[in-house]
Every structure is written in structure tokens, then in C-alpha cells.
Amino acid sequence: MKRIYKNLMGAAALLWALGGYAETTLCQFEETDYSDISTYDYWDKSPFNTGKLTGQIDVVDNPYSDDINGSGKVLAFQRSRYGSHLYGARIDLTTPIALSPTPQYIHVLMYKPVSGRVALVGLGKRNDWPDQPATTVQFVTPATKELDANKWVDAVFSVYGNDAAELHSLVIVPDVDSHLATETDYVAYFDEIVINDDSQQRFTFDPYPLNFEATQEKTRPTEERNLDSISVSGNMGAMYRSNLADVSTVYADKTSADPILLKVGESVTVSFGYTGSWMHRYVYLDKGNDGRFDVDVQNNVPTASSDLVAYSYLSGYNSTGASALNSTSSDPPAFTLSSDMTPGFYRIRCKVDWDSSVAAGNPNSDNSIVANGGGIVDYLANVHRDNVALNVVARMCEVTAADGSNLPAEIPFGEAFSFNIDMDNDYNITGLEIKHGYNHEGEEYVFGNRQWKVDNVTLEEDGLITIPAEYIDGDVAITILFENKPTSIQDTEEFDGLRVIAGENQIELLSNEEVDYSVVHVNGACYATGRFAGREVISLPAGVYFVNGQKCIVR
Image (tube, rainbow, N blue to C red; front, side):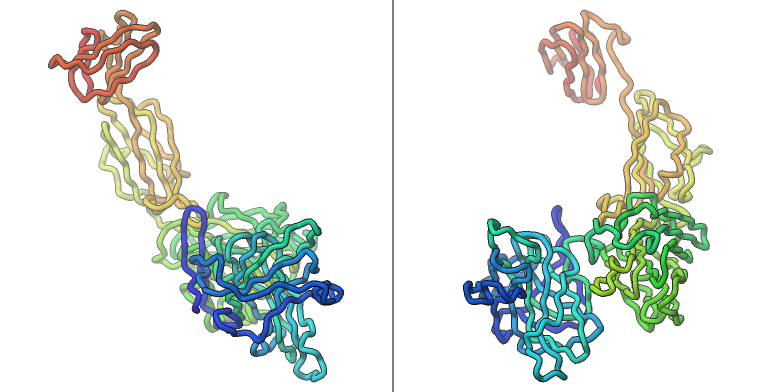
């Protein structure tokens, strides 16, 4: 049965299905597409190896069929407290897999009730050593990331070996952490085992995934290898610097900091302040604003659609297609934004890594971004044009440009804007609501990237108003806030301890002492009576009323 991974987006979860790499399916368990299944323990004195205990493993109906994994059959394995930390489900393959020094990636769809680290043990032999058993351990490798509990998750394992090595069996270890004897055993489920050249999970619940935990601390001394700063410059005025010297983790999220200002059509240079050598620099821009960085490199040059936009070294070349040495410490060449790029906030990722186009970081266990002292930092880039759209919602007032002319449809990006507000006689201005950014009709955040923001400004009088330049960072929508001028009977004088304020479709009664009141329409209809102290608000249609015999007008 073919699996279908859907793109899902909801309030609690985000699921991305990724693809595009040639792959070979090893096991799906819908039919007997394996040679044998059994349990395996790396520990030779394990009770499962001595015969004291029998491992539990079988192909069963999928107990957790959902939109992620709707298959009918899965492999079930009971993890036991009596096994070692490398006790797992052994699957003998129908056809051996040839290993090589170039990493490949085995993906296993996995469901288990506890989160934590998982591993893969490869059993096989060298084809030039005829006497070597096919059960010889070829590798023990952890998954590129810890797995969450109670959901189908794609576990990814980097595998490689000698050119002559062949893989005959896989052992999936659902939990490599130590367990006390009192802890409860559990059943883990496996499905859809494939091998390909893609280090990315086939799907992920998070946008912009990493091949390590976001909280991963640096493992190399900062005086030896460290990402200290990022600087951005452009031929149309872009200028940005970010100090990262005090960041203790491999990944830094700077998307809440001031965005990098870039102009459509601008040629952009990113400079990396990095302590160390023999490491390469990469720049990504999520042009599609789709929560991931898609890489498309052809003839050693990124295509126009590629989110990998610049790099100093990749398989012997930089991003212009020029030859480069793997010992280079150079910054990547400049890249140019398309002149017809849609203005907006885009995520930009800067990475120091070793010869890897993977935006999530090189996951190879012998060459990982973590072990090599690399780093990843994310920013927001504000890609803009010279002008932005202006929209002013004006009620109960007249608005004009500072010189008295009509308001323009567009105003200059990043410059303060002044205009006049003249309130109608019966209303006072209280402030402005300023919505600024892009895609005002959409969500405020898209994949964690802020698209727009609302700021409120308090005003006590109308006249010439200036919007600060910091709010002109995208399209601007201004709503003028106001209130009715107080209108009370007897020229706001109190009578019998009662004060009446007539407003829009309501009257407000104020009294320090308990008083009786009645509200009667001019046509004689009684709308309200009662007794109160303090404040009372009565909703009324527009018209002329008498409150305790005194006239007032409700608008």
C-alpha cells in the first residue's frame, strides 16, 4: 500500500511532506517484503541471546492509522527492561544494500509512547571476505534528532561504510536510554523503511527544521571555532550587523530582532565573522514563504527558484560556479534579489558548515555541523520597494496631506509621514491604530515570521499628525479613533444629584447617591425606569428623550 503524506496545517500542528530524491523502499510490511523478522540485542549475555527470554515482535494491524500513516500493517516490537540499550527489532532484508564512504540515509516511520533517542544497527559483511558472517556489525548510528512521543515520526539515520561492505539486516532500536528495572515496558511500531540521499525527514511538524535540537550547546571551544557575527551590505543601501559572540547554542533565532532591510533588485553580500578555518558559509532565503528552504543547484549554480542563494563552497565550487578549495575561509559571493520579488518579510538563514547544502545542518555523524563547530542563525528580511501603500480609515473627521491636498495612495518606505486630521464638531480624537507590514488580510505570523504588527498611539487633539518612520516598514493602514464629545442636559449641570451624558445610541447616567430615573421618548414612549447609584448605561436608538423631565439628544 502506497503511503500518502499530506500537508496539514492547524492550530496545534504543522506537517510538511518533503520529497524530490530518488529512493528505494526496503520494507512496507503490507506483504512479506522482508526475509525474516526477529529481536536482536547487541549485548552477548542478554537473556534474549542466552535463551532465557523470548523477544516479542510481529506484523500487526496499524493501531494508529491517521493522515500521516494510513497503512494497514506495521511492525510491532516490545521494548524490554531486560534488554540492553541496543535491544531492538531485527529485519533481514531480501536484497543486501551496498554501503559506500558516501553517506546514504535510511528513513523509518516510527510510533512510540515515549520520546527520546533512537538508533539503527547495521548487520552485514564485506563481499570480499567470504568467511565473514552476515551478522557482523557494520555500524551503530543514532537518528539525526530525538523523536517525539505518541505520533508517527520519520526517524533518519546516516549510514556509510567500506566500499566492499553490504548491509543484510537492520536493527531498529526504539530507545537507547538506560532504564531501571521498575520502569514499564512498551510497544513501538515501525513502518515504511526507505533509503535515499536525503538527510531531511520526509515530513516534519515544524517549519524550518534542524538536524539537531534547537537547544544544542556548542561542543567546540569558542576560541577554536565560533560564529561571532553576521554582517549584511547591499548596493542599494542595505547595512546590518548582528553580534553573536555570546550565543552558547549552535542555533540562534534572531527573527524577533530588527529585520534586515533589503530592496527588490538589490545585490546583497553576507559576511561571516567566524573564528576557525576549513569551514564553509551558506545563505538561504525562503522566497516562497512556505516554511522551508528548498535547494536547487544545477551546473554548480543555484537556480532562480532555489532558496539556497549563496555559498562559499559546495562540492568544489562557490555559488557563481567558480572553482573553490575546500580549505577556503572566504565569504560567499553576492546574490541578487529579483526585481519583481513580492515585498514582504522573509526568513533568511546564515549557516557555517562543512560542504553541505542541507539548510538544517550537515547530519553526517562523522562530519556533523555540531561536531565541526558550525552554526546556524535565522533572521527576518524586509524586502521592500521605494514606496508602500497607504490606507486611512477616517470617520467623523476630514483627513488631508500636510499641505492640504488629498492623501496619496503611496508613501516612501522608511520615512516619517505627516498628515492633517480635522475632527467633526461633536467628536474628540483619542488616538490612532496603525497596522503596518505586509499581507494585512492574512495571519500576523506565518511559520513563525511576523508579517504585520498593530501599534496604538494616544492623541489628545487633532491637527497635524506625524507617523514615525519605524511604522512605515511596509503597507500602512491607519484607523482614526475617536469618542463623542460629552453632551449633557442643563449644560452639564447636575440636577437632583443626576448627571446625564448623551452619546451615540446610548445615554450614560452618573450619580454619587442612589436616585430614581425615567427615560421617555419625545413621542411619549417610556424606554427605561429604575433606581441606581454610581454609573448606568442605557442603549437607545437615535432620537430626542427626556430624562427625569430634562431634554437630551441621542445620536
